[in-house]
Structures are given as C-alpha cells and as structure tokens.
Length: 408
Image (cartoon, rainbow, N blue to C red; front, side):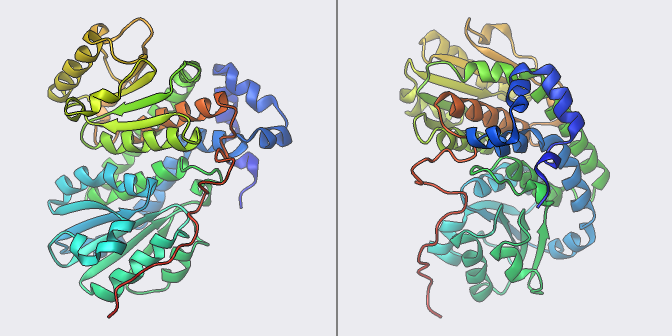
C-alpha cells in the first residue's frame, strides 16, 4: 500500500491549495483530523486523477501486443461490471463499437448471472471485458466463472484496480483470461469509486485505439491537462453550489456522456446516503415523463455536447425548462455555453478543449464534476465522504450473497 502522502503529487497539492482556499483549509488539518472528519482518502482520490491517467495510458500501451491477440477476429464485445463498473462500460461502449466495427454491449454482471448466454450479443468468437475496482464482489468472479463454463467461444479480459482481489488472484495465471491490473493508487480506499472509475474507463478505451497508440497517448495527456485545469478553476464554484438547498439532482447527457450522467447520479446518491435523490436522463428522453421529476428543489446538471447538432437539441430542451421555470438552478458543463441558456443563479463550468478531445473521450471529466459536487454535498449534509453510509446500508465491497447458478 502506498503511503498517504503519495496519493497526490506534492506539486499538485501545492498548486491546488494556492488556487482553492477551501482545499488549503481542508489540507491544513492534521492527518488524524482529516481521517476523523472522513475526507482524507476521497479528497485525494478525486484530485489525483489527472496524474493517474497518464500512468494508466503507459501501462495499457505496454499491453498492446497481448490485447491485439485477444481482440483478433472477434465478432462481438461485451463490457460487464456491477454498479459504477457497469457504467464505465457504458461510457466506452459507443466509441468502441464505432472503432472496432463490431456489436458492442455493456451488460451488468447481475444480468449475466441471472440470464447467462441469453443476455450476450450474437457473434462468435466474442470477447468479454470484466471491469472491477476490487474484484471481490460476488458478481465479479461469479460471472466470469459462469461464462468460462458455459461459453467456450468467449474470450476474457479482466481490468481491475486490485491485484489482491479475488478476480485477479483467481485468473492471473489462467490461460483462458488476460488480467490487467492498474496501479495500486487507483484502488480507491474511500467507499465510492472515483479515481478507479475514470482509470478503468481510460483502460477500456484503449481497446478501440490499439492501431493508434500515439493518438491514445495524446488523448490521455490532453484529458489530464484539461482535468487539472478543471479542478483548479472550478472546485470552489462547485463547492458553493453544493450548499444550495436542493433535495433532488437531475443529470442530463447525450450518447457516451450519458454513462457519465449515470455515474454522477450514483455518486450523489451514495455520498448523501440517499438524502438527495437522483435521476439521470437523456435530453430527448426527459420530455417523455421524467420531466415531472423536476421540482423547485431540483438541481439540474447538464453535460453539453460539442457536436452542433446534439447541442441544438440540448439547448432547445434547456430553454423549455427555463420557460416552464423548472428546477432550482442549473450547472452547465461544456465549451462555449451560450448566455441564453444561463439563468441568474446557474453555474457555467467552461471546458476549453472539449471540441478538440471529443464527446466520446470527455466523460471522465464530466464525472469529476459529479464527484466534486457529491463530495461537497456530502460534507454539507454532515456526512463523511470516505464512509458516507453511517448505518452500513452500503459498503465499499458488496457483501457476499448466494449465487443461484444453472446446473450443467
């Protein structure tokens, strides 16, 4: 285990503290006090992400030959995980499908346990990518074991943050599966997935760019710089909005960024122990019933596309919300946000470079916005970000439960 001070590079801590007084105040407290207040791990795990992404990029590039072998000739791709790990697969599904030109689905581990091969996309040979932070949840090893037993034409890739987890330990030496373990620093110690989520996304993202490793590296480096700037510039503003009297939060996004909306909604729900209820939806889907969720106590978080056509649909919907005077206020995450979409109390988080890096790669930064918002709302609720579920309703690793697997 790395020492606590190595979780975030000292230079990054110094720069962030200089730019954001609220961070300086939190870090000025002793380590013991930070642990007592329950933010020691999660604050660092959120803020370390820009530096960890370049490490993950280098690690994945080093696995290129093995990945090319396991991808060769496949006719379908399945991305699976549970909770946040499922959403990580959802984030990369569309770009991988477009780049590999094969059927690609993101399927929850629980669905594969209950429905087996009936849930898998057609096309053999196939590849199943198991995504997991700890690899110790019942679904992680159970799903892979089931597929190995029942689907001989499915190859397996495991992406995990925990070398000591059951998934990595069980299959590290198994010739039927390729296991790639990310750096230990990505194995978040806080209850909720933060750094682990974005690094698993970027690790899986490489599968679509194996033929363009230099482009993959450029993307990761661009995202790292953008995320560093985003945190330095916007952390305090996000902390301010977290104090607003909202009891509901709606997250809106399109295409690949909808996976980020799902993850951001989960972060708010987890870190407030359900005190803030959440919903995620697409802009066009909102009109078909879910708009009724938006009351006067609802925060509306909008991940805005860089694609002009998608942005036009999104802008139309936001103007409709404003005309109907729905919601308490909005957070708008995007580049070049037009003033007519902004009401008096709204917060614009300008993201320079979004158009250049592309919507398909930007979800990791959307998620940072959601993580910071949930982190500061958690503290506003008097909870501890490292362990917000005070009554133990949820835990860092899902508790063991019986697996009702089919008989041979």
